[in-house]
Amino acid sequence: MWLVVGLGNPGRKYRDTRHNAGFRVIDHLGEQHSIAVDTPLYLALTGRGALQEHPVVLAKPSTYMNRSGLSVAAAARGLGVEPVRVVVVHDDIDLEEGQLRVRFDGGSGGHRGVESIIWALGTRGFCRVRVGVGRPPEGWDAAEYVLEPLRERLLDDLDALCHSAARAIESILVHGIEEAMRRFNGKGSRELPLTTC
Image 1 (tube, rainbow, N blue to C red):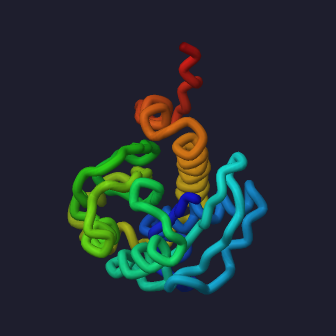
Image 2 (cartoon, rainbow, N blue to C red):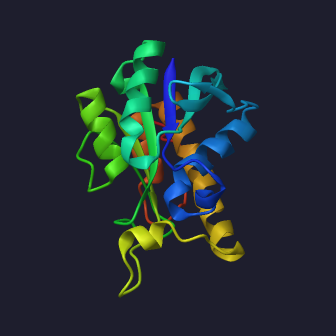
């Protein structure tokens, strides 16, 4: 069993913002794999199903971003999932728009949601898929930037990147973290072919 968690804030006010990239990735996965993410459980909306035949629970915490760890820890305990089988997907202002990064372990990079998860799980040893949203323009506060409602073109660009992030999560489950890193950590959201040797 895998636990795949998208970070974001609940409510219509936050739905179309950069900070809700994690929720959008979970929505993509749910649609692609016919998993309804609508069951309130573990302080989140959850859905149980399979990604490429791998059992999974998809989750969108309802705790608000900065307390995401409460939900992730509750779900991991309740499902009996070890942190190494937890995948967290979230926005990242330290990556250029259109970039993805897959990694295992590491710090929070100042992301409060990831910080909360590290604290609640008591370990940094879980998988992350970072969705690049870029730095705010000069004079903008970072919080104001990530919580800005996006217009149609920017939202379309974010959705295309979230689709690639969903593919990266599938790759982690099917091929392992190292192969997913090789395929998705290049410049932009271009996916490299599978290693054949």
